[in-house]
Length: 398
Image (tube, rainbow, N blue to C red; front, side, top):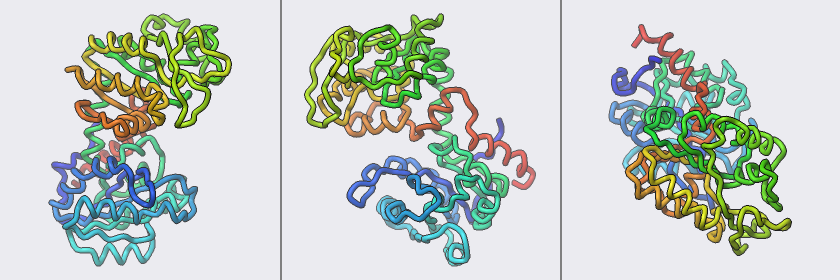
């Protein structure tokens, strides 16, 4: 589908509303992982070099339409200022109204204005037309670089595009480029599915249409074992995930599923819990499966060494405890040694690799969570559809 391109659109000296996803983790009053902020820098720098005035809008957390002091954007201003020390960055503790209008009017070209948390207004999540118009009135052009929010039908994602010529930022285009390699992969294509979210069971069905093999770890593994009538002790499962696992195992694609042969178990989710290795057939009634075992790591590596494309979504174990981070660590190292295209999706996996200092030599680590999964499922992203509709609406004005 057609859409405006940032590099060719006439942007010199324009006021640009830039939607970013700066929903980043904070610890002890400071941004603890600025990956998403750094990911927006190519777009920010490009627009500043065009002498644009940038009005940046983002959300943080889930304030449910109310002001939550610890979710204000001031902390983001400080983090961005440290990355762009020579730029004038102005923080406005609102996102609509006279105060904001005045700040935009006073700002010199090449300045950055960061607005308050968009979700402090319930109208943002309500996809409210009036709220979108108020945001759009601040600018000449809208640039959406918030890939992590592209699956949301929110005012700053899908409604502002009706008010202004709207363009995908460099991060969004980069995400689409690499994630498309997962949908049309060079074969053999090995998918690794893990993590703690059992709702991803439905996603495995879709992965099977693109994958040569799907390697299963994390909490998802135990739904498959339960579906095979294997005792899983106190491991995380639910009736819906077991039902989906059984449907997959009964399907014609069941031979693509690779399950571990052994697991690392403990008795709690304590960060001090010790690991012990048992066969998948020997999980005790009072034990919790918290990682895949050494035999399974060897098995997974064997499949990975034949891959031309690797897609990884979800850590293989409870990586927050070092005793159960071994599989995630070993599989990451194996992927790093390959010549295959490797794509990591999902916040959990990216966080695990950063925690273990294993982000190097991975082809691409997606900044999206739900948006990445939705795209890989082949579902249209509302934010992308909105950009395409904006192109049709405004193409004769560019």
